[in-house]
Structures are given as structure tokens and as C-alpha cells.
Image 1: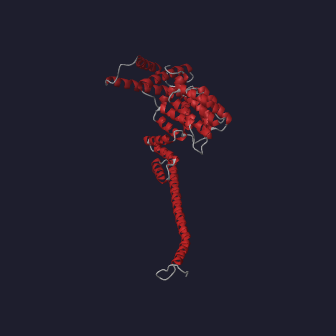
Image 2: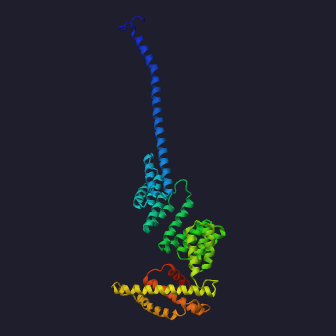
Image 3: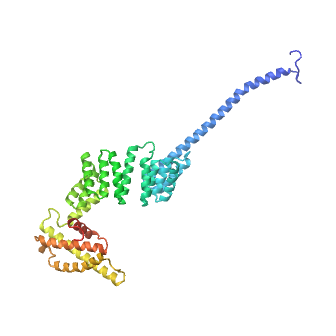
Amino acid sequence: MLCGEPLTPAGRCANCEAAVSLRRHKLGLPVLVLIIIAGFSFTRMVVDWFNHRQDELASAWYQKGVAALNSHRPGQAVEDFETALVYAKQDDDEYRVRLADALLAAGRPNEARSRLLSLLEEHPTDSVVNLELARIAAGKGELRDAIRYYRGAIDGIWSPGRTPAVERLNARFELLEVLAANHQNDAAEAELATLLPELPPSADAHTRLGQIYFKLGDARRALAEFQHARQLDRNFAAAYAGTGAVALQAGDYPAAKRYLMEAVRLDDQNANSKDLLTRTEQLLAADPFSPGVNAAERARRTVAAYEAAVKRLDECVRSRAKAAAGGQSHTPSPEMQADEDKLAQLQSWAEQLRRYSTEGHLKGHGDVVENMMRFVFATEDAAGRLCGAPNGMDELLTTIGHHRWGARK
């Protein structure tokens, strides 16, 4: 003990006690630091695990939603995507877009649009969001909004993972389809002027362009595009289907059948090609003037057409008389009055032709066949305007007549 140092009650030197205490504190500080560090590390580990688990759950529910949507269970998909958004750490834009897709598929367009508009406020240049809103507007017939959103998609920013050039081209085609469907031919032509320089040299692109021209009523340019597509790819089914559709519209049933058969051979899962082929075969089977039909078959088809037209005429006359007796008729327009008068003329014409309406009388008499078929087509045309759209055989005969002689012949 140093002389003059104060003593503690226990008789120890006070400075010695302080030195011992300091040494204890120096030894405890690192331990405390280690404990704090370990605590922070454990907390971080727990937080990381929790976040990772949330990501896993969000991703799992998202994948369930995608699977449900792909298997045509939109109601379930809506629930799955909503659950995915609950687990997502932040509102994932892709999840929100897919939820809107599911809501649309579930027949809830207003909810889908509401969610997409919210997204658009946050990301006004997002092309995907604009495209979804364009489709909703087009489906509701809101043409002005549809055009605005389509242009937003075309001029906007596409999310990572998408190819902007391809996506823009597809959006342009969609816009053109909407314009064509709404008979906005001038606007479509303006849009085509922008699209054509960007059109890639592919069978798919030229076929889609041909389909646009066909919808716009330009069969010549449509046929040119379909032919170009077939040159680029001899096995591209849609190009053959397009060529067949043009031939069918023009009344060239043999050519239509040839191209549509090839389209079905190349893609036997395409329901539209199959339907067009079936219709073409029905028209060929009903048309007395089909190439290769012999005199006996032409006579048989003419008798069948005459009987169908007479039945349609009688039903139409009875329907008009019943409407007049029930007070349902109104003052007809001059055009309709002319059709009313024509019904009586057609009844007289039918009686004059009745004695020729056997296969024996018609076989080998092309002039009588021609006259009888003119009666058939005139009857179907007038009855269609006065008594509603034709069905079955009547519809086939109407189409054949319009192709051969045009309407009102």
C-alpha cells in the first residue's frame, strides 16, 4: 500500500479498487459488443428469412393464379392474384396487371379498368397498362378511348423481358383491327402508312396485314398480301385460309375449297378454316352452276332450289298478311312497298314455272334452268328484306344469287 492512499472500509486501497473495477469494465465491454452484434445479426437473419418467405409465398400464389387463368378458371385466378399481392412486399406491377387480366376474364371489366387506371396514374408511359386499357375500351365500344390508349402503348415504354419492336407492331395491328371493325377506314389508312415501313418480311406479318385489308373491304390488296405470305412460307396455314376467304367472298367456290382444304391440312385445329371449308362445300353442293355439274345433277339442284324458294315465299306472304291483320304493319317506305308488290309478282311467276319444276323437264334445258334460278334468287332476296334474315338452304341460295347476279335481280 502506498503511503497516504485512502483506505476502503474493508481496509483496501481505494485506488486499487478502482483499478480492479476498470479492468472488469474493460473485459466486459467487448463481450457486450459481441452480444449486441449477435443480436443484430439474429434480427437481420429473422427479417431476411421472413422477407424470403414472403417472396416465396407471393411467387407461389402468383404461379397458381397464372395456372388458373391458363386453365380457364378466372374466378380462382382473381383470388390467387389477390393473395399474391397480400404477400408481396410492395405492389408488384406485373401481379396487378395479371389480376386485371383475371378480372376481365371473369367478366368484371369495371374492376379491371379501375385497377389499371390506378396503375396508369403511377406509370403513365407503361405500354402494357395502356394496352390493357385499350382492349377494355375497345370491348366496350369506346373507340376514342381505345385509340388513345393504343397510341399510349405504341409510344410508351415496354417492361423488361419484352421486345419493344415486336410489341409495338402487335399493338399497331390490334389498333388496325379495331379501326377496321368500326369502319374507320380513313383512320386505318393513316395508321397503315406508319405500319408498312416497319413491317418485317415474315409470313405472319403479311398475313395479318392481308386480314386487315380484307376487313377494310379491299380484297385486291388482301389477296396480294396472302400470296406474298405463301411465297415466304409455303406451309403457313393462315395465308391459305386468307386466300380461301377472299375466293369465297368473290364467289369462286372451287378456288376457295382448294385453298381452304390446304389450310385445314396444314392446321387441322383451326375452327375458322374448318367452318369456311364447310360453308364452301355447302355452297358448291347447292349451286346448279358449279363447274363440272352434269345436266341431271343441275336439274336436281334447280328443283330443290325452286321448292325451297316457293316455301320461303309462301311463309313470307303469310307472315306479312298476319302482321297486317293484327295491326302491326306501318306505312311502308317506297322501297319496302316495292318489295310488297313484288311478292305478288313472284307468286305469279312461281305458278308459271310450276309445270317445269321436275328434273325431267329441266334436264338439258339450260334456258329454263336459268329462268327458274332467277326466280329463286329474286324470291330469296325480296323475302330476306321483308321477312328477316334467311337460314339454311335459303341463306345458301341468297349468297349464290348475289354472287352470280348481284342483289335485287
